[in-house]
Image (cartoon, rainbow, N blue to C red):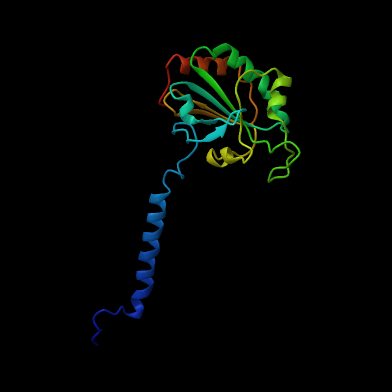
Length: 195
């Protein structure tokens, strides 16, 4: 039986379809490879943009060359309230030594609710009431949660000077514990970067 040139036999359609689908999957993976990178220890911290209390954009590049504790939190979160004083003590201990905290609030504006139904809050009044002096950053859209693939609040990422995530913590922790003071001290001293 002769087959006409330029036509694909019916028995070859499943194979051709499989090749096309496989090609599409490979192309999609290639074009989204940076968005699929894990947000865990040992990987580069994803770029982000949030705003400070004046509405000025703050990005990951703002902290280039510093050890950074990136903390995602909200005023309605009781564990966040418990964790913040230890973050302040850590900040007081290391802030002059190229260490910074980016405490990013995902609160909806006061009087509104977020997509999950959580009440909006006033992160700056919250920080003032707790006597916090480290920068409070605002991200009412909650984009930071998608970018860092958080599972809730609080969630924190300790990022070394070279922009690599050194430690990820889901839930509240005691940031001025002996272990955390030692870890941050080593990173500020330049030990252990590039995990």
